[in-house]
Image (cartoon, rainbow, N blue to C red; front, side):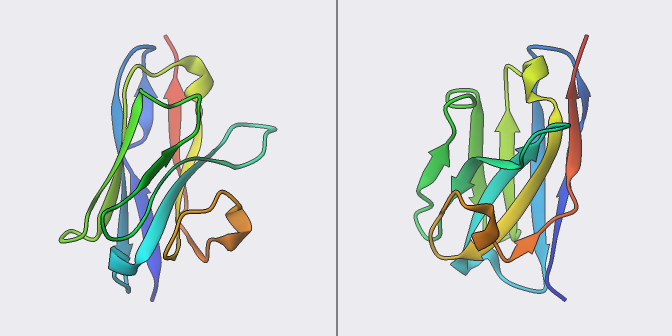
Length: 123
């Protein structure tokens, strides 16, 4: 059974950090690009970061560039999103998703999705 499971969300104060994990089971992430998306209440689910296969070319949406870092550990079949300098506007449900080969921003092109993890940034 192909499955992605996110973890690591929670409540954090502005300026704090969290590390999200996206663990895969039932398939190897070696041949998949992994995107991180987020969805705030009343808003669309948008990509904020992605990492490709192999050497792992990375992509960041402008609002998270310089604060978030995506990485992958193929031995653990897991992709991470390190989030630093968090802001209240980062509050959302965060999802990881997989697609073959290269990163794209169109969410319909991703074939497997996790259930999401809530990130709340508030004092």
